[in-house]
Length: 391
Image 1 (cartoon, rainbow, N blue to C red):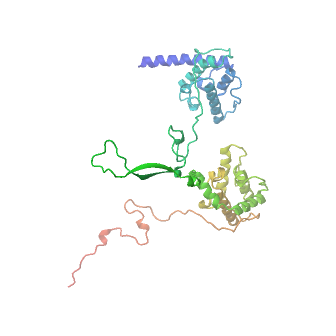
Image 2 (cartoon, rainbow, N blue to C red):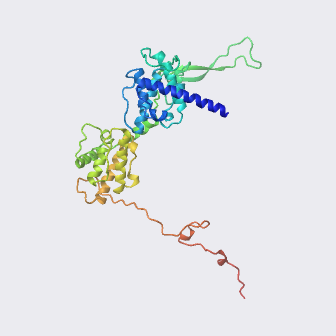
Image 3 (tube, rainbow, N blue to C red):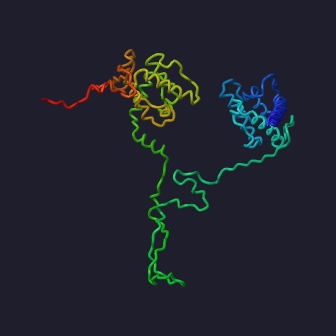
């Protein structure tokens, strides 16, 4: 076993050297003293290889040293390798290279790519790696309709079920019995039988049931309770304090980046949000919303008056967002008296504080019985009721 493992390691080292030499020749980037993983980890060299094999196949290559940008380069290379003919079974995952989990899979993938491009890129006349590999993978979009919540993919089955269930009713109809050549023993000659008959109901075509998802049902319920007047009042209050204009944007579109809310908090209490992200990246915008909520908690808004980040960013529960901002406008009138700007709603005096218990430590057997209003006896032997003889 040791000898076999050694031979495999030697073969993999030789294959790695062959692959590295091919990458150097194609990309023009020398490996130097770096290890194979360190050289390819950023994904830039691999993207250069892909663009050298098929110019423009990766339009944008990130040169940033940020981890998620480097992993993005590796992802771009993987997509390009698939287009150039590498089958899915020969691909590697991004962590296999970036975290050096399975470098053997990375080496095999690049070696397979070297053989695939000899078939898929006949215009490339540069260095070759391995032998010609022909992999033909064809993907086609299903002709079947989209799956429904209740019906699944029943519409794509060989025998399609009725689309309008209200129009197909199976009923038993009494029909006169016809004599058969071999009647069943003991059966009466004039006994009626019930035959199932499918009767279409043309008068109920308008009663077709429509199904919607749970999210849509909840959204419709929220929309039914949504207070448009409150939204307008809250947005005008924010405009008056921050100086920002809503314009033609909806409240969701205007506030979802979190920048307006962070500016609102800083106008009411300076430096409540020290850092406000101006990036358009989703996680940065959600971070702004979190910063505002932390500032609102610090100013005294109770937890039951808060909203969740998805409630605003995804627009799921804008009614809760508006109610929370109304609570925020009332609380700051009490907790931030130095703010003399426009007010929203009535002043709310909400105090939420945590206080450490002053009682003693709970015991293993007695629990907190020592802190009860009526304390239990500590020594039961001292509290025994005995009959006393009176002479």
